Structures are given as structure tokens and as C-alpha cells.
Length: 223
Length: 223
DNA sequence: TGGGGTCTGTCAGCGTTTTGTCATTTTCAA
DNA sequence: TTGAAAATGACAAAACGCTGACAGACCCCA
Image 1 (cartoon, each protein chain N blue to C red):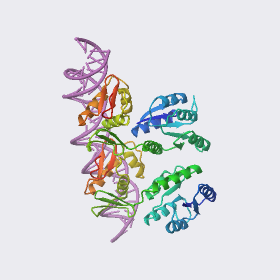
Image 2: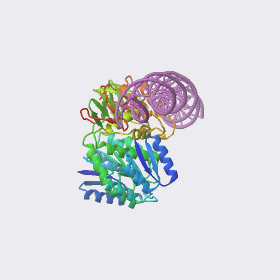
Image 3: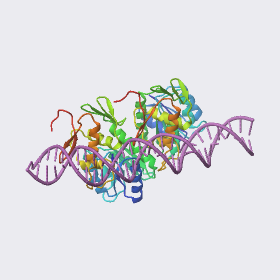
Image 4: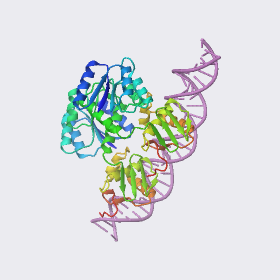
């Protein structure tokens, strides 16, 4: 899961990043408002954490622009202590939750989890593609009712592809979402991972689009 | 819909009452803990809003007594700013949600609505998973009718997992709810605890999802 | 007051699983 | 046909979770 963190205070940014990564998220940390807006507009995030006082472009403006353009990932707003005005404005602008500074890391993570859950909760926690069934609550994949034992990384791969079924997912996007620390070097980690998953599955679920990426598709739908 | 409001601060009590009435609720406002307990015990409410710092009888005690006597209306707890401990204790005592002071009236009403809506489904104080039966009123776990002797911490662990059965619960979430001085970067306290509980149980109740957390599941729910 | 028991967190060690890399082979689209 | 992309098998390091031992805190009871 990829999170966008927008915070201009270097220290806080670092601390939060560390905490989020410890909680299993992939974090894009950004200090500048305009940069943040661009990222939120072009990348795909599970959620964003947004500080309101920013250089470049004010946090509220960033949020409003995202919403105006239909970006609906949940946003957790960080407000200064006692800044009631900011809270109200933030909620009006489309924030899903707010957290006054200073805050405890645990609380931040808990709230983040909550808004992600809520946002994902609108959709069914189960994704079905052909004979494969992904239960995101149990974090389990079954084929024809038989559970398949997957490693964390393998599960993340399948989950990501199934949650984006019908779309070709480039390798790079995959590796970005698989909280690995490799910096786009020549690595065939994704390919290896796909191979491992395929070996465990009794059916052909993941299709290769040579030169483009991988896709999980409803059977019968042609390319 | 009738709401019980328990709050000793005259000013807040008045404001909240006004807001709730404006939102279409009938409000019983009470400042004293013992009186509040009596009301909650004898009257029928759709929900309660409970401040923790009270004269007469502490809010936590009030809540615990209600729960001990089977009163299962949803309770929204008001906590002082940053009172992390209170929050955890409140949830342990059976609160459905909490709201840190100060808060916006709109938010209070929204959260109240949410817990009332949620309460429409679940009310049973007993959770059964396979051969295991958790009685949250007696704070007791039985397997095949035989009670299992658990330490407080062990009970909390099992209770939390059983109350969230069918869902993978991350280790961090667990340690957050086990009111300890968690967030130790390296601590295997949860693992140790799980091990201790498992040794006491005659059946395999808690499953490990390596890399993700733990889950308690209905046996045979493979999908 | 002291002693035993319980509870709880820490630590180190252990075995297993997981995962990235590399070398090599296979496959596919131009 | 051919070269790049993808798949595969092997390997070693790292990560992860389980366990037993231990120590401090706490409580109960003589």
C-alpha cells in the first residue's frame, strides 16, 4: 500500500515515514505543495497524509484541487493544535479525518488504517476472477474454494493485480507497490515473484503482456 | 430516539444537548456518575455519550457496570486531549467509539449517528468460534464448555481477535490494544503472548499469517 | 514484614520461510 | 529469424515467528 505524505517539517516527515514503513506501507514523502499536488494527481495512492501549512501551495488548496479533479483517495489532515478553523475548512474541502499536532505515531497509524479501511470498505472485501477468489479481510486467495498458501510478497502481488483486474499493470508499478527497497535497478524480482505465484496456482490467472506488464482478466474477455 | 448524555461540565452539557435536540434526538442530560448509571440501567436509550471524568462515579466504572449488566446500547466516550490511556481503557470497557475534546458539534452528531447505525446489527455479548466461546460479560473463554484460565493480558488478546474474527489483525494493532507501553521497535511481546495463549488452549484457535498478523477464523471457512 | 505465586516484558537462540540475485534457458513479437 | 523480454532453477542472506529462560513488578497471605 502506497501512502503520500505531505509535510514540510523535515523532522516530522522523517519520523512519520519511518513509522509508516514500519507499519508496512510504502511512503512517498513530499514537502512542497505543488509537488504534492502533482503526485496526488498522477500517482495512485491508498491514502494521503496532508499537512496544511506548506510552501509552494497551501495544503487546503492541494486538497481542494484533488477533489475537484475527482481524486477520491482518503486524506488525513494534520492540523496545528487548537486550529479549529483549519479543521472545519479541511473537512469541508474533503478531508476524511484530521489529527491535531502534536500526535502520537500510534494514533496516526491507527487513524490512517481506519480511513483506508473505510474507503475500501465501500467495495466488497472479496474480489472474484474466474475460479479465483480473493478475500482481503482474511488476506487469503482461494481457487475453487481451496485456499492457496502465499507468502506476504506473493499475496501482495496477486492482490494488487486482482484489485486492478482488467488492466495491464506495468512491472515498474508492481515493484513500486511491493514495499521492496530496490531502486529501479535492473532486477527481475517481479518476474521471479510472478513465477512463484504461478507455480502455486492450479489455474492460469496472471497473464503476461510482453513488453507492457501483467494482467489478471476475467476468463473469456479477449485482449 | 433517546440519548443519554453524561457530562459534568455545565457548559458543554448545555451545548451538546442543544445540538442533539436540533438533530432530532431526545436527550437526557446528567452530570452525576451514579445518577447516570441508574438511568442507563433502568431506561432504554439508543445510545449514550459518556464523559470519563465525573463526580459520584467515574465514567469508566459506569460503563463497565452497564456492560456487566448486559446493557449493550452503543456508547460514545469523550476523552481529554491526548488521553491515550483513557481511550484504550474505554474501548476495553466496552465503548463503541471515542471523541477527544475539544470537538466540533457536527462531528459529535456524525459519530453518534454512526454508532447507532452500527449497533443495529450486533448486540450479542457472546462470540462463538468453532469450539471456543467468549463471554464478554463474564470476561471468560470456554472451549467445549470448559473454562480456560487466562491472565488479563491473555484474555484481551483472545477477545480482540475473536471480536474481529475472520479478519487478519496486524501485530501492531494488537499491541496497540493491549494497553502497554508499546511501539517498542523491537518487541516480541505479542508473539510471546500468543504463544502463552496457545499453550493454554486445547484447540488451534489463533492462526499465524506470517508477515501480516494473526487471525481467528471459523473452522472450515476456507474461502 | 517476608515469602511464594502470578503476570508480563525482554532477550537470545533456533529452525523455517521468504526473497532478491544471478546465470541460464525459453519464449515471443517484430 | 533474431534479439529482447520473460521464465526458471539454484543459492545465500535476511526476515520472521516460536520458544525457554529470566527478572522485575505486583499481589496475596501467613
